[in-house]
Length: 361
Image 1 (cartoon, rainbow, N blue to C red):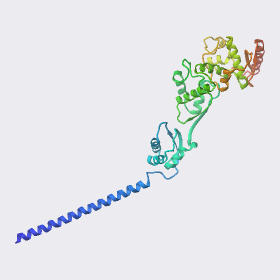
Image 2: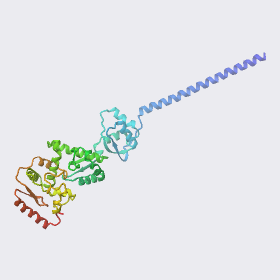
Image 3: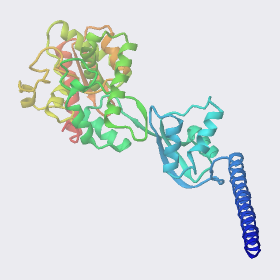
Image 4: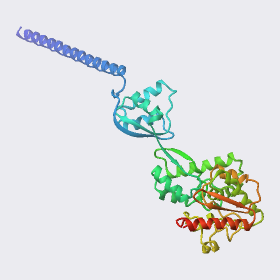
């Protein structure tokens, strides 16, 4: 009898333990469901709220570079790295929503901690594009061009000099001694971060464009540029370009030396003179010396512009064989058919030099 009562008590205890365990499991499941529901609500709220994004218009300033070939995701990562936007998703979501948006390579001035929309608006605004501008005048030689490029673009002259040492690396005629004459004189606009290589390639491409517009055949390009560079250096006024070209052409036609002081000076490297010395004019080792070498010099002596190129292609009709600038201050130039007429003009020029000893050397 006592044994049956003991077994009954054990069975009641076992049933009680099963009820407690069952209740505990149910409680865990309920708590788990509550946690899962809270996580789902959080995720759902995050989805409706969108990715992380700055709210303000931004502060400070930073220049970001969009490289050629980058897509919208690449640009977004760049903006995140510069702390312009809070997340890449905030930026790319806008691009996905409007596929018509186009991002162009270049450097752009923006602020940090901007909203994604604000950053996109800033990049699309042309006023925020950082550009470098440089103007290369007609007649400039390579050293003068490189000096101007360094001044306005901030690229060291040494980089241009190193690249220019190998003309075969550029789109210039085979056998050209240098890229002299091929850097077309004009105003250029470059993106911030442009390289010396990119600058030279752009200027040479512009010279090809000019030659094509003038109808110059590729096989004639080097000769035309060389001829035009002489005209560019010797003429001062538009009306004189065609006449100077005619004097040179008339001399070429009869194999008469061009006798250009500008070519002699280029060969000596002394580019800031009006006259040359008798010794310099007699120096046959100077390949640019057109007093002793007939025909055009071995290459251009500067960068000719459109007017000079046109003059070389279509010289003004006339019998002149001589010219001299009798007044370097005003640019007045006398063109002569005979040597006697030319000598009279030369005496006028020499008188100018006596009256103005600062000129000519």
